Image 1 (cartoon, chains in turn green, orange):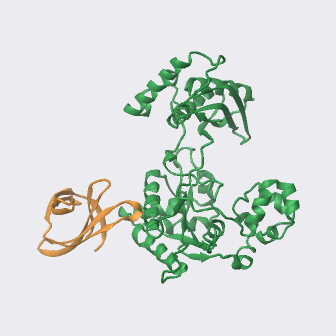
Image 2 (cartoon, one colour):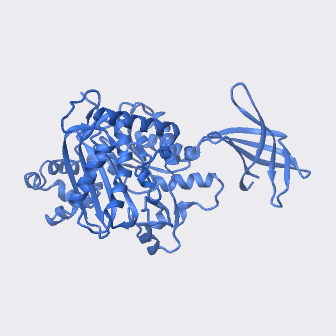
Image 3 (tube, helix red, strand yellow):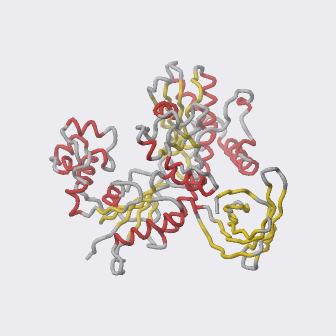
Length: 418
Length: 87
């Protein structure tokens, strides 16, 4: 018989901002970023950049995560903006995981600032899980200089909801018997997997709180939302049963890079150059992962924020920068209606291993020659730096020859799988 | 003690186990002159890992301008930098 599980969800409070603040205080800075209206994100001088994290005083100005720095600065004129430093955040995240591993061997890193910890079977200890969670929270605060929220429950979903209750520096429980009191009165968009697209649909059906959803007719939900309807209904009822798996890597399904351009692109040639700068990095990542792709997709966003995308299934599998680049340029030409462009993205999917490959008559050019070229380019870039070898078409263009990627390959990005 | 967080030039010796021991350091004063201070006494040493950056803190005492002063030195392990953290 399986005993009741005890799962902790540990969530760093405004992670990027408090990590930045802790680091800066430790470097002798007088002002704690957490106590003034401040945001982490982008470069305030160029148009590039969105709010990645905000302080609690900045929240009072209704600044939202994800909005542009320009909009945020309009809401609060004396806002302090600091650029992000991903290396530091990775260090903070690793240090947090190290502390958690003292308490349990099964720690799942869910994203850079969130972890699940399985505390099942350790209830024989003198301390209750609640006290233990307080101990973990205080250890992180004392040793690493930032605060976390910990949610405790019998499964990952409820633990995650609990850690979101009241911030900062708190421990909350949400056991199934507390569901009605603590979770059901919350607005429905607070539930995991209910986002800004699902919320208006649910609202139109008269569902405003998680409780409304939990007590709604399942058949109607299934009819309206298909399989996800069942999922969110189960979640609203606190049903979730996935394991805390220390290796949380979900199989990769695609690779893509995109960039927001600091000016509006109005001609085909510049757009093609930007496409190639993205394909360059996508190709390198694809080859580094030992995969081939057989689907290429291009997406663009105009300066009026209307997005469109187009994809093509290939008759062959490839990891060649040139091949992907040519196809993306074709796709772009078919897709673009002439509006000024602000954002371009390229992604590849339908991945297969590069261990064996069915050669094709339809491959444009000499496949073996291409392979050798790509290998040589990758080797040179690895040895002498990313910008040691660039396409000559980028000379005097003022554009970056390689584009996209935050260097975040080394930490997991949050997924929709618990 | 107040936080100053100034980078300093340091002479230190390391034990076989890799524990650093500060001996003498040089600091640039506000009037751009250099001042050398001998570390007379290390009172205690502790490790810290604020914001995930490992460092060793040394609480020390020295005779500076004919007064005994307490201060805190910090050795940042990732960057190998010595810092006069508090005085």
